[in-house]
Length: 445
Image (cartoon, rainbow, N blue to C red; front, side):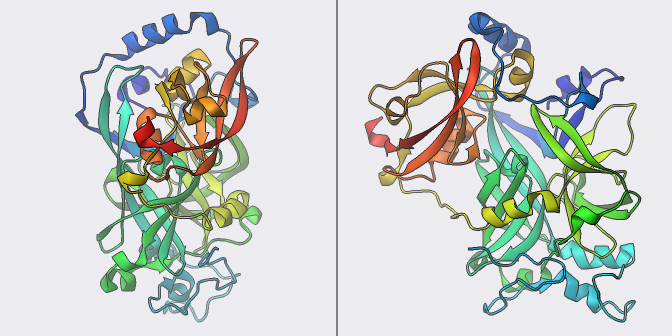
């Protein structure tokens, strides 16, 4: 969300934003203002004014409200350390400490047990080494063909495990999706290049992988693996909690509060999230992907959004671990892709413009890429894509911009078959469809 959009929010609105941070780096091309963009799409889409997105949800308590996320923008399984278990594979030559071990060795405690609680200081001391800062850059469209600009993005992450080759970090999908570059900064301020192992924009969860071979010994000795709660569904309203995250993009910060409510639903940039925890622990910009901890030192939720209304104070939203635990397990098993050689690069065969969250909300379009042209005999044409379809997902990854999609394609070889999700106009409504597409070699584009 840009500053102009924030300034247009009236005091009596509930406005929710993702708690990540995005800052403009430089203008890639000259761009026109939002007013011109809106006029362009209005003229472009006059015949589709009544288009509706299939299965679009509204929350009764938030009718007339909008929500936004909390990162800063200018996001075979081994190693999940569930409470009461030790899933980390310690047979590797490079070991990582567990937060539960740190708590158990705290001099203020005789032993560590699942029913014991710790002081805020002990919890922070044990968990800070499991927290990361995720920094990246992204290329954003200025709106419907009016140029692009580079933006720096920063958010938070939680180290939750490792496998034979990688350290695994839990964060929000909106922090890391559609990035051109991504690094993870650890507690000792060492930064290492990272990759998105898997993400799910619908639930706003992602797993980031860092090659163990790229992490030096000093960093391995400094970091630890957080403990994910195995029973976060039993969290009660009134329980004290601790939030840790990269507040305002200035570094890790600690806030303390209570669980204010459970099972709440909010709408953020057109997506409805349900079964959320609400906390009065401050969730600031940059906290997206950070941890909400109970007084046992366990991660019970992933911080991701806040309310920006001037009439609402100290209302942060957290995704409970129990609602996404199976998804986390699944994402940790996905293949971590690396950029393919130019000789194997692929293409889909579309030209399009970005349907941003603002355009989506203002005009009722699904968010994604509005296809303006489909190349003859291309993979897109063979898969059934046509002009004015909206591409929304590629191989399970949400697609929100042409630049982001082009970045995704860098990791797919010609000849691979993937599933795409798109919206097609039927009787003045956009209907969601899926198709299998086999990518062609970029030299044939």
